[in-house]
Length: 109
Image (tube, rainbow, N blue to C red; front, side, top):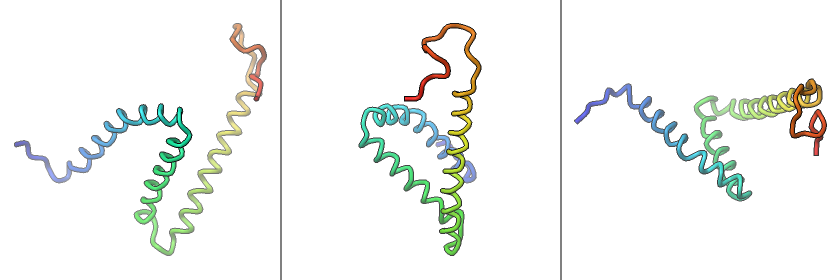
């Protein structure tokens, strides 16, 4: 029987979880793309797991503040990324070779 050092248990379990994600998440993602209900359920499940970290990150009296700041920074980051993407789309140089788009920048629908 193979002996495993006690300190190596967590890295082995983390590696196993990543391997499971590599196999399972593309399949779950494809299913979620085809079904609004599955997408909503998996998003809700992801929030449950994300919220489970809060007791490890903050003391009970700080949890509201830490959670609020986390959500605020997440929305701020999403807004900044949206702004950068809009700048890229609307101010990009015209491509030098013909493309499948009839106009540049691509029209927003």
